[in-house]
Image 1: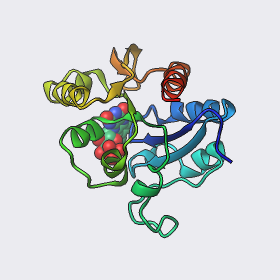
Image 2: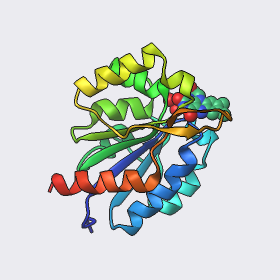
Image 3: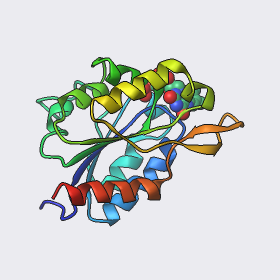
Image 4: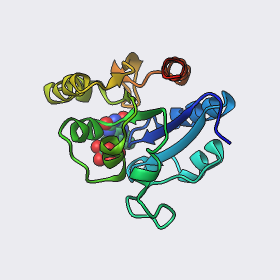
Length: 183
Ligand SMILES: Cc1cc2nc3c(=O)[nH]c(=O)nc-3n(C[C@H](O)[C@H](O)[C@H](O)COP(=O)(O)O)c2cc1C
């Protein structure tokens, strides 16, 4: 049965903030949002797919070629969704998406989707302030991508700066607003 509040695909890329997305997925499920999760290979270094499978109640995709999804998870998991969320979004994902590259599952799903997309970047402040990264963000904004702005504060690199992923509650509020607007 379709979830009342909407269907969302959460794509997790390789950043330490992946641990916060476990809480986000749990809150989404509790808010009656249907949530499927896909992960990059790097993301699996930070959080295991079993955690997201249990929290979402659904299988987790992390390879482009997977017999569980004969049409490819980039197609099957982007059909019929109201929103795609990339959290945390790595510098690598931003670069690929800004340039239309599709050499892994998440970047391919980005191109395959037709719904709105919310991207929550997270990275070390030196990475976030790089001209190349900011150019990619500006290009993605021009392409219609919505951003959850990273915050300033303590980072896992043990320095203060800008690049902390938006908190799960803030992301949930943004997701709920976007879902309401789309109905
Ligand atoms: C401990 C550790 C933490 C990392 N944290 C981040 C991060 O927060 N943001 C980021 O963009 N890259 C981070 N990286 C680098 C990415 O994991 C790396 O660029 C990877 O290729 C990203 O792949 P993906 O975009 O396919 O997930 C980190 C790497 C390590 C080893």
